[in-house]
Length: 135
Image 1: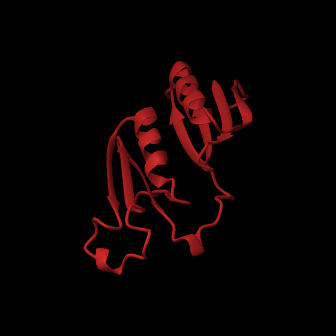
Image 2: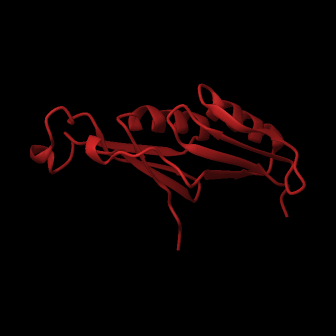
């Protein structure tokens, strides 16, 4: 079994997933409403909205889409967590995700981790970066 976060956006899914791909690497695929087999059912003005985005980084997958305007709600009550073992990589990822966003807890040493920090990125998605040594 794998748990795979599915993120919804207010017409910013493409920008968000392109940023996540640039920061995290991996393989990115996206489909717009107009590119789908159900394109004729697309609401006017929604043709370029992302119907489905998928970013695979190693064994991890995060997916997302642009929510129809009447169904979008701001994310809350969760964080997407990135676990790494290298403090330099933790800093790089944290700083990149925090750019244009809001840092909730600066990346710092804690009693459980070499580095830990929390932020909400410029797309409104909450993240935690956790860096623990291997083993």
